[in-house]
Length: 171
Image (cartoon, rainbow, N blue to C red; front, side, top):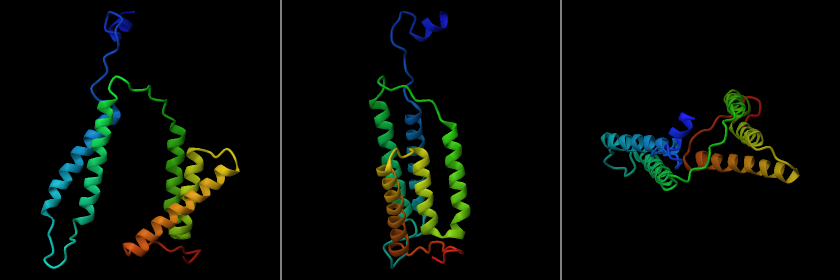
């Protein structure tokens, strides 16, 4: 009874919530880390003849991370006092996702990037939210194929990154 009254403020009022939830703390930590790394990236050498140096892509990534972290922090502060109750953590799904990712890492050199990535995305999507009907399975397949194609062409064609070829598939 004492603890219940203490949680309700002693007079039956609302429970005082902490200033930041887990999302807010995560946003604050990521924002601070991004800004710190962005500041330290100023020391990277700048080539004289090429406008894009070694720090170009990391700085883009850090700016995007800082903006998204700030958005997470602001949205947490905006929802203060109106936060929904967090659902229970499903550790079974965390373990399954870890096992699927581990299998992806080991299958990548065997099957190659394209086959392994399509399988990884499809299996992970079906595990996290199992499709209920044929249309759901078609959507999972389309997302897996689309994610593989977009990432393959961005890295292989645009960024000229050689992706792993499979020992069994040859591509």
